Length: 305
Image (cartoon, rainbow, N blue to C red; front, top):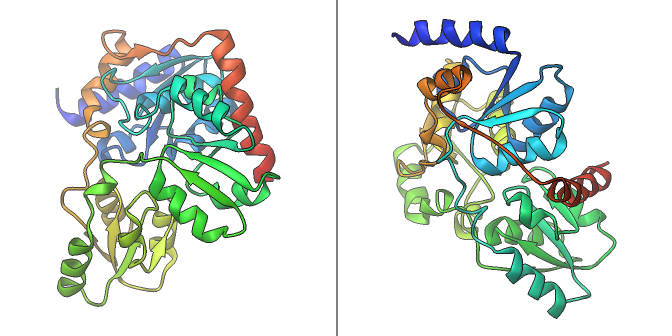
């Protein structure tokens, strides 16, 4: 089958089997083109709540599909490729954080949305990269144990100096591949270009950026900016997508190595086979896990208002 033939079959099967397809921004362009909604993990979870379809297919990584299930437990949720994990989400065990909670009873535990459903069950609130600063500001407690990404936590701490954030050594291995040497080389090659980076990058890289923001914020900034050239410091698929959407601008990767192999695990044939019932994995969570994990997400929504 050709790419176009697979796309046509996916469109047919979506309607026939009552599916909504969600694609994270780090997915490839061909998957973007068959998705019903594209964005960051939490935006996609919210859209899943709104749609009427009974089945939802996540093109992303496991914690994203889990978040969809937590917010829409009545829907049948599938992960397009079952090996698509998130290394950061798996870095911290529930038992370790429970012990830290006992040792630090006066701290509120705040989890990046990039965590497992199980870990969310013992957290006080979640954050996304775009909402983290606002939520940390709005938490009544001045003492915060922030997990798992110490780079995002460091960036938030600098925006909210009135709070004390205790950070653990965790983070995104993909964004950690970007170095200050990459920044220096990119600026030499493209001196007029603005550097846009994700706060999951190392603080030394973040400190050299012209703009720091979530993936969707980086895309929005590049589209709306009057500047004509940009160096993108996040997963390299964003460079490709921006080239498709902004033909009048130039985009360059900050590092050719900033590639998430877990995101790239999902292919267009995976989506097709999942819709046919021949691949993918249904996400199943115990009711108790859904109930407890949702509390931290609901608190995020409350604090973000």
